[in-house]
Length: 236
Image 1 (cartoon, rainbow, N blue to C red):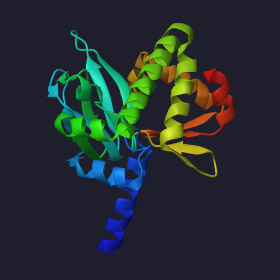
Image 2 (image 1 turned 135 degrees about the horizontal axis):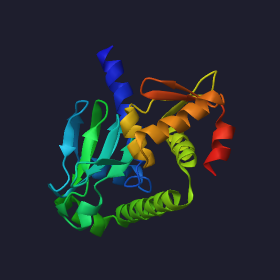
Image 3 (image 1 turned 180 degrees about the horizontal axis):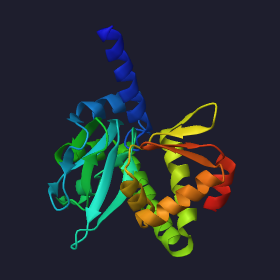
Image 4 (image 1 turned 180 degrees about the vertical axis):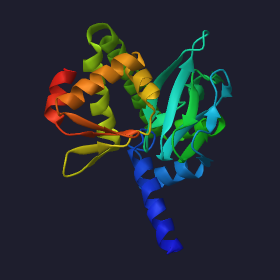
């Protein structure tokens, strides 16, 4: 049984890596070479990987679990920038410009990561242009996401942003069921509100409205999308 569990775990890791921008364009030989340069990191739920302002020179790929990236204002208010799952990368800016981290990374669940340091990246960029393309794609995707988030804050109302965030979470963490799509986001109500970029009260009001319309069902740290099409229309 342990051997079977180990093989299944390795399959999960391999699938996560192949979907990461850093690996996506690599052949098997190049992917194996890159994997050999990375170190494994394991975090317990609630454990902090690094804090905003810490020095950093590594990029991370989530292979199992979830990581949240957040920032804290001078007055103590917190903002959740992103919730990341298997196959997603973060910390890539430090590879090109090692310096203080711009956010705090915390494990939302028990989480496994693979890390690549700046010193190991330089020879890969020289000998493997596919790696450079993967990183550029990641940076372009991050910029596009930032632009979309800014546009949503300016042009969308809170219910529209809630609907859009639910769809995004369902695309990455959703599991089809007889009722619809079950999304285990593992976030508190406050964290979910931070991810939307609005107060907890306003986000809870929007969620309650969706429940009343029969679009969703709320469960502890998860949500079931019952009417995806209606939610998609509300997100536009």
